[in-house]
Length: 299
Image (cartoon, rainbow, N blue to C red; front, side, top):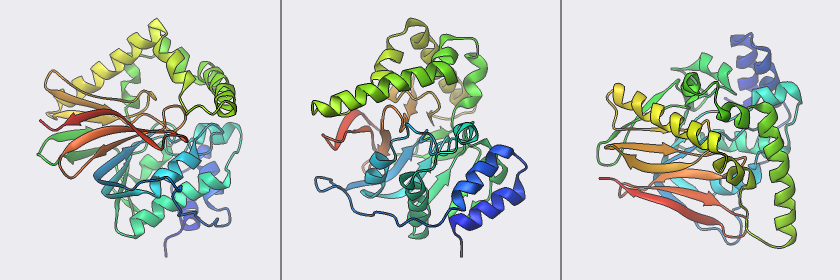
């Protein structure tokens, strides 16, 4: 029977990457019971497909509690995990694996075992998982990239998006989202979050607000989005779903669809397509359970 412990053995057997050993060590920990109870005010989310990315399990600022609440309430045919699900870079620097992080991993296995199609498209922070591309990792499909067909037949390229770094390596985005600058933003975000809880305000990302107002970062994000769309167009797709830059978005541009899932460090967002073919970008708040950020009807 497949289990996280079995996954740990496979990681050690199949990869020589030292970062993968940190994930293997986390998966090999004793099983922690998963809390399957949604919050009292929660409403169920019925969808055809859900995309989430950049969870960064193993990183102290991961909002695993919000994500568990979301996973306990989704009913969908397919769940895409669009990269950086586990932060092997952070685990290598400092091993951090709280019970909630482990419960998120178990929840993915549980959903897949119960019949939900779960497709894992690894990113740069969980790159060793790309060794398993084209295979089943227990009940979970692993793919370097994937093609998704919407309810009305649009073909979307599903990729994490780190391949676009070639276009922005020397930009402000590298400095802002890079290790030291990003950790400073998250430090600010952490203390801002504590303050807003004291005054009873809903969650919002101060780090995201700062990032979106730095001129160089805004230009670099625009470059990333432009190149992601260009890659989709070059390969004959009708659009792209990606992550990587922790900047959620959903729009049509030049006849192509651009969707970025966001993340579960700052934004706490998920992309959803319902059975009528409407795509929405949702934001979690511990005060207002779910807010609809943007909506895009299939056209």
